[in-house]
Length: 417
Image (cartoon, helix red, strand yellow):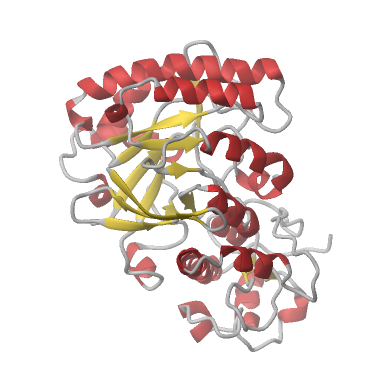
């Protein structure tokens, strides 16, 4: 993997080109496509082509795909072909950014892996053995990232010390494993919200030979899922800025998690390069269509359209006026609300199509805003969407869900709260 920094601005962040394979170049800031079990949630490969036909970086997670390791050991073609999305690049992470990761289970020599079958414990050797079977284009090093804004100093220090031991093994095994000869390792930076601990983690990574890893993944700020949408910028941004000032410019920086659009812009302004679509998924699974405005001159919008709202049952207009996605061109708010009420699988499919289309368009505007040195104006636009009032982009869990029986199958009926 090679990262080329094209431009950098104090007020607008970085523009770059990420070359994972020789013939593929991805523009940064980059939005990875979050997957579950190797598939983009609710969408087939053919359906996703209706959202975007551009080259993508697929974010795969070991917590949703670990059961595939044995069959992948016999697979001698690219991982993207195995998951039915040939031609795309792949990045393997340990945890699913869409779902809350339970706390605990860490020990001196193991990291917990929470799968559909329950908790498993991985040593660094076991982890690298599984990664070698997947043979992704890019993967993260093993780390103890079980920290959040409430973590104690002792818990934070343990996460750093354990991560150093895990990574010493990962660096050594990466150099020896033939199946990982064409894979790039990302060095994890942990340490919770403690600047001293973060500096210790960075120093350990930078003490390695420059060729032993190809970039950084900043972990340990949240417990994934909706927790990432509730992070306080005043608490997170100083820690991230402290870390980025100590990292070299010619390596990409990745931060997984469902950060709000406004917080994402602030992270980009400080120099983070790669994010994922877990925010779009978390909105969709809670029956919210993304409707915030990121285009100058367009009409003011709210952050979301709540598809469980009875007020839209007779609104025969698109989810978002002017949106060119398949869902908005072909269907109305009233129809998608009807799909929600009748538990139809088409409902979340259309909602996911819209949310991914909207978020991909948002990142295209981000890159053009950086090129024009206008990221600050975009931040102001998102902050003050409606009559000069600060917009709230947090995603709240849908309180109208009766049961979880239909999750993953279609919309669930609403009941009076």
